[in-house]
Image 1 (spheres, helix red, strand yellow):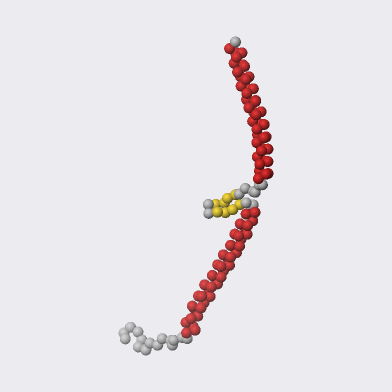
Image 2 (cartoon, helix red, strand yellow):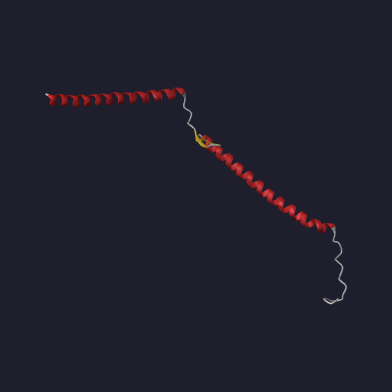
Amino acid sequence: MAWGSTKNPTPPPAASSSASKLLPLVILFLVLGAFAFVGYQVYVVATQIANSTNKKLETKNVTFTKDGMKVGVKEVKQENYVDQTQSGAAENGGAQTSAARNLEEAENKKAGSKDELMD
């Protein structure tokens, strides 16, 4: 041949054993298994943290829904609720009557001063 040596090419190496052919596949499965195990452990820990946080927040009447966070009202017995609203209404009622009385007195003074000016 004009371009290279005239030596006979060496034959390809003999076929290796099947164990050496499967070794890369076994290593791949081991690495994938390790990643899957680590991912699963991260998922389990995150789920436990989420559940414990939900339980702690539920004791404070805070819940998470698809729409977002909702804050609930603490339970109040019916009798206590009625007592609180009635006492609040009584206090506000007294304030409203005194405010209305003051408004009437102010209007009477204005009306009285207008009457004096007309005389």
